[in-house]
Length: 464
Image (spheres, helix red, strand yellow):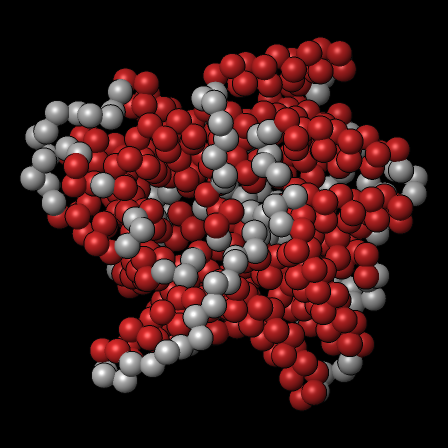
């Protein structure tokens, strides 16, 4: 069930109306949202609802036991076991085929060819996100930041809540679980902010991201050697805009839907291409993942407490694993490695300080775009052609049009908008009368539907 479809629109309106009809019955309301979340998830493949339920129940059970125990070696062992169970499920579904294929090739190169058990494992949608939320549940309980006495319905709803289930943001247990303690109350400001976030997300996804993908990015990255320099250059910029608009659109719609249901998620993107350092970029891009890696991986590894060598080592490990989290491919590892090297070099040279020049913004953006080539390319061979084969640099433009160039420019210009523009508009809109708000929202939805191209492509992060 995709967000920008009539099916999801009808589904969400039904859930929204039933949820608010139960606003005085919090237990039934949570049960309704839990059932709705499983219907939403099962729309792709109902068989994986069992995996989602098993993950939720196992984490809840571990949390109950861990939270009720005093600090001890047994408690530490249970925490490690709970984390390993989560990572083991993720590793099997996401990395089994990658590991077996590479092991078979390595053995062949050594002259030890073997028939290895290669299984066709289907990747469940959203497993990377809800696995990390399960780990967050365990660690937040271990740290005393989440209540281990939460009921099973609360724990299952936290891990499966449908607005952010498939592609985030990754919500912390300590942030979301307390919101389930009582029935939420909603304000006009929350309604208008939720509506504007959904509208803005639909515009970014259906009008900008989809058009850039089909008209420019996908054809060029499929066969970069067949296109000239200008097409290739704008395809890189186009992908930078596409992945930002696509992923931030999902996040905006998820945050907006949650707001209309009475729940609050933290900001997930904060104009990342205005960053003037790589450290700042990761404070603005995919914020729920970058802060998750910081708090649950980088700091437990030692963070910056182990001297310069330890800090650089921890940065590299964190970024390599962050790259691997995105997918079972060497190109994702290389993408993480490049960002890790950039962060390490920036730190070693003392270049992460605030207030740097526009030149640092341009350099940061273009190194990020260089890394996007690795991220988007299906393999190293394609990336190598993209980066080195410039025989056709002077060839005539085949794909780039004024409209596509305009979308790229507009997508980058968004990062110069007022940082809290949506919140400001929501505050102004909240002062209008309810019929005016409803008519305005309907007109904007209609305008977006008229502007968007036919068809809806899945969100990029569905594959992660």
